[in-house]
Length: 120
Image (tube, rainbow, N blue to C red):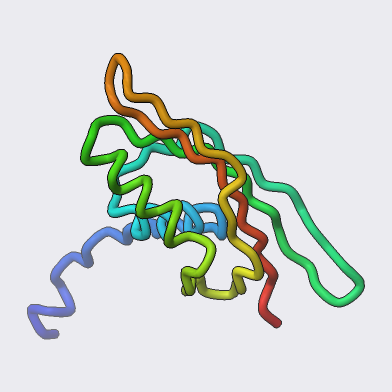
């Protein structure tokens, strides 16, 4: 018998499966340069005669001058951004509301929605 056959095998690591929700959050974080913090994220099933998917509604906080700049760019880029989420097609992405405050410190809260359709 070889020495390799007698050596212990490394323990298996359990892989956590990323959900569509995880992928949406990661894609949005990449878009805003990881400068925002998700305050709220809801997901609702959505279907039509020909498509099925989910509608995601998020509130994202950008706190501080640099983060607010990133948030403003996020607001400008979101509607036309081409997402790459495996197994999903982003049919619609838009900004619903923006709350901008300068005092006591700069902050921006962006409400956005995305409609994801399952790719068949």
